[in-house]
Image (cartoon, rainbow, N blue to C red):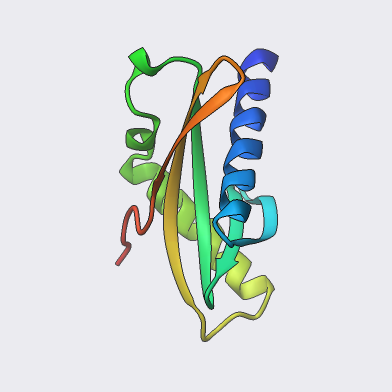
Length: 121
């Protein structure tokens, strides 16, 4: 992964975190890692714990970033989320997985937020 790609990803995560805070979310943690996985943002709002995957694109011709979270990535996110819940001894709290797509247009983001983006068995 190039440093330019990492920089774009970090910018997108910053934009997503700012957006969530403006929507009334409390950011609990960013870039929580376990094994080979990572959850970009863990936030809370109205008693719901939200695990957020952020996908950022420099241009929209690559397709909609929110569609980039495939089944393998969903399983990986679930594994990391389970570890977070275990470490923080969270047993009785509603949780969900959201995806935020960020497309960079100059210095301005176009943000698409998909709540309950996927369900896991």
